[in-house]
Image 1 (cartoon, helix red, strand yellow):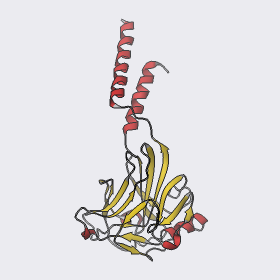
Image 2 (image 1 turned 90 degrees about the vertical axis):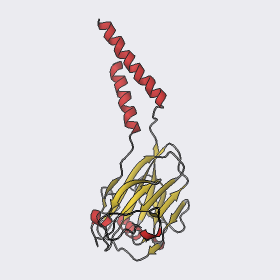
Image 3 (image 1 turned 120 degrees about the vertical axis):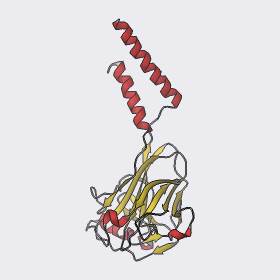
Image 4 (image 1 turned 30 degrees about the vertical axis):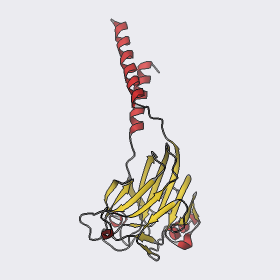
Length: 244
């Protein structure tokens, strides 16, 4: 690789490293590979809202009941125990996920002026590590829409589980996935706000995972990047001077 190409590659790499991931909204149809969820890796937290599913292992994730899961503080107004009876398939992983998704937590949208009426908070992240969370939702019969926040920043506007995955659909459920680099040991995920066009703004959550994906890309400090740009400019000048 010649020097000019080297500098251009380095600059592009630095630019890409500065980019943040965009949350992905989609569906999942089960727990097996290719069915929408990532259940392979190192999971620091996995929550179910159904107490009989406590310590249910699905893939590499061991789901724990939200009311007693260590390291996660959950603020929610209500628990609906018998909410959803999914039928994702016949594999052991699918059957485990069906148990995990049986219940949900929800909060009344009118109970907070801040808009975030349902929250998850964790304080054990490692700064500089890359994490990925998956938020899982099952809707049974409401024209529901709400916003989703990460560290008090809105990341998904007017999210509607039934618009994404359908209503009374036991074979697929709605999913929000986001990958990010931890800049703090604390992660807060909030749900609430107002969503125009939906008669119900009460947020829900059926299950959750947080995965430690690994180390972050080392992004140059602004001063280092400036030196890199200057070096690239000097290199180009020197190459042109040799041709004169």
